[in-house]
Length: 67
Image (cartoon, rainbow, N blue to C red; front, top):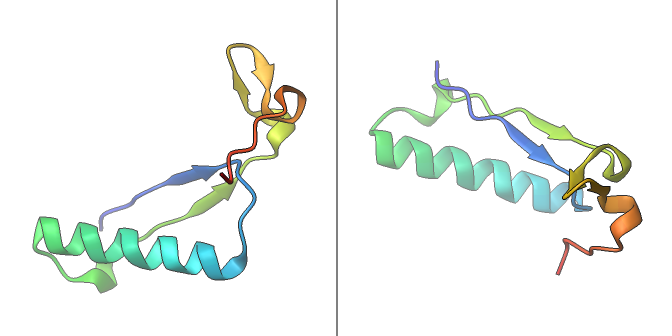
């Protein structure tokens, strides 16, 4: 059973998450030539204050990753 883990700190809607998970699953299934129904994709939402770049949290950096 293939497992693709996604870590995300960017704000996004439920619809956008659905689109991402469906696209990841479909692409993996196509490339690996396997059935999509055996692929598992958990999406982990990481609070922006718990994710840093160069030692500065995304919450403190002012970075807008939704652009």
